[in-house]
Image (cartoon, rainbow, N blue to C red; front, top):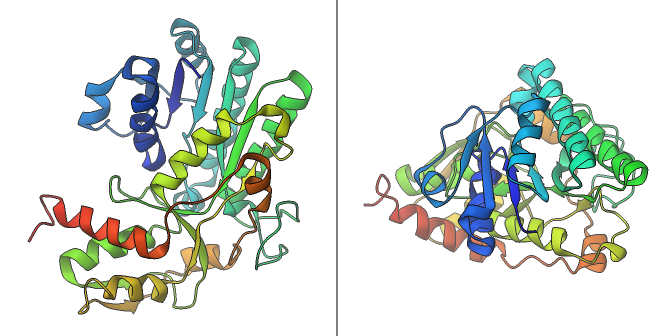
Amino acid sequence: MKKVLVTGATGQIGSELTLYLRKLLGGKNIIAAGHNREPGKEIRESGPFKRIDCTNIDTMAALVKKHKIDTIFHLAAILSATAEKNPQIAWHVNVNGLYNVLEIARECHCGVFTPSSIATFGPATPMDQTPQDTVQRPTTIYGITKVTGELLCNYYHIRFGVDTRGLRYPGLISYKTPPGGGTTDYAVEIFFEAVKHAKYTCYLRAGTCLDMMYMPDALRAAVELMEADDSELKHRNAFNITAMTLAPETLASAIQTHIPEFEIDYDVDPLRQAIADSWPNSMDDHAAREEWGWKPQYTLETMTTDMIRNISQLKQYAS
């Protein structure tokens, strides 16, 4: 990777991945691109930012050619809960936008990283230790777009030789950027509410187990996959990866070791609960471990300590 384009650079993953890549490769070599949100100060000041719409192939292609991009991290997407409210827009952005990126990559000989998701699985999938290769029949539009994306990326690799790679991310937890309309947003919100109010009302019911990962591990995984030996990759689009399996009460218990007075209660959102119930309880990520050496660095305990320490230092949350 020498010159990189990050689409969706103002989103939850993109805003952090942009800065992570700029530290590795230099600010001028990472072109951040976004559409709806305003970029944060760090992104504006650390390197180029371009406002583009990934569903407009002409402006995307012009940007890639102008900056001689060799790698695209395509993160622009409509997330699960938001997608269910407007499935037509979700399809347009998540599928047509990816198709544009793949077409540009084919023409310009770019590598492409695209995040997939646990949402590609559905009720017919084994729910515990979901295998790398298994039934993928999601019941959400977000999941359907992500399965379509995996297949499109695989097709462009086989048919045109595009170096496509991807990860099936679990829920991602971070203190740096706000949630973006996903079903696992509670796992971020709970920390902020714990620090500020010592109480959180969760929209998923107790006992809802889902895989999660701390953002530093998610960023490192994306880069490590793109740097991995191509000849070793059998499941390039996309690998299961995970770090920990959590239910709301599991997170609450971990937080209580730092904030003993913290309390959690529940007011279940039927839409997001239905989405969560269609996803696996846990994933098997042995393929990623074997093919490119994936291994998470953060545990529930170390993540919780880091989240609470960093949120407590934010100006609006400092006591």
